[in-house]
View: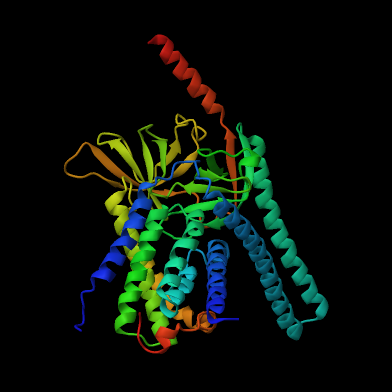
Length: 287
Length: 175
């Protein structure tokens, strides 16, 4: 028996083990289409995830409450009980004020937006880390469909990848599978924003002569019929022009971090769709 | 309860545990520690079963919960299975040569399994996808493996209790 003994039975089992995943790779994941046998797994996962998310929320609140209590105890040793109680009350009021400001901001955004929006809470992130997807607590029963835009008042988050009755999976703009039609706001140079890493994107297919500088704001075109027109995506951090080639590569820092997003909006219906449809109709009539 | 029934019960508990841990990891970890990468806690349960249970149980723990991982990630199912199969083969080869049931051994294998899983998933993405993973997130993988190595002794006793070594392992020879 050597250090690496050759056992054909083992080699056969290993080959078999490698073949099964290779076959599974060929089964493509289509947007919005799930095999019937996968549905129960999605639904069960969603149920457990929602429960855990609710539980984690409670734990978070309990932890912060406990920390506040420790603070109060410390202060009690130094100051009067009444003073500590007031400070604790002030802390709670401050957190309520912050929450109030955040919710008012969200409400204002929803009110002023010309599009039909649906608010949702982020309940989870991608398990494996190679992709950057989010899970939200609204699904097909709330009118969500694959391909709809997901935004926050500060900028684009991504688009809906899959929906189930009670939850949906969102593909964020930093994911390599993501592609968004975009323009440089200042020069109107057009390209496609694609995910590059968990926190960065790239603006691709810009022509070499297109005017783009570090600090430029990148916004959506609205022509894809998914995202509202002129909605901010991110800021240019680096422009790379190689010695050869007809295009240039632009690095973008998204305005919204997917890690910080607790609440998002799904664009159920964008008015730009009608504009795009009208334009298409006009063009087809001309032809 | 017979040995077989006991073994099956432990396997079912492990499957439920791995699904629960995966769900916890997708929400709980991010609320508390984001943007620190999660140490793939679910993989610790998988590694424990592969290390301390039979080959068949090791295969079951790959294939059954994978459908849940698939529901919790944008990663294609085939990639997940491929990555886990690579981990399975690595553990099998290692176990045949070196096997020291201890906290340190488990922590090392668990950390190495994270690296193997991530590298193989990345490689298969590069080889088969039109839009593959952009670049290897080497530092993130190392951070995950390091975190796994540090925190695994905390839950090792639970995994050890849930995975009493298989008879063949106790006798010192792997089948």
